[in-house]
Amino acid sequence: MAGARGDAPRQWLHRKGRGNGPGLVRCLAASSRQLDVPSNRIDQLISGKRAMTADTALRLEQWLCVEAAFWMNPQNSYELGLATEK
Image (cartoon, rainbow, N blue to C red; front, side):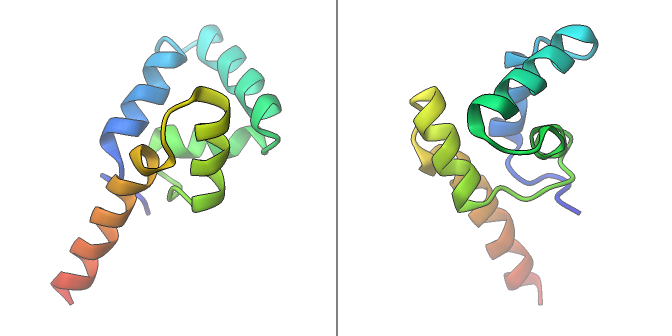
């Protein structure tokens, strides 16, 4: 499970959806169409149930003009932390 992966990007995406409720649902549907990804991918990223992938980071960079590294750095840090613990 993703858990604490990428809190900053996750919180940023959540704010873009303006919290829970109909606004978030509309934002998720619109963003998934713009990104050409299934709507549950964005929902799972926000809820911390899915890891950020390079593909999704590049799509977000293209759509939001926020560097892919912003989206990938927390994921990479999380995975390095897990590997260090082993």
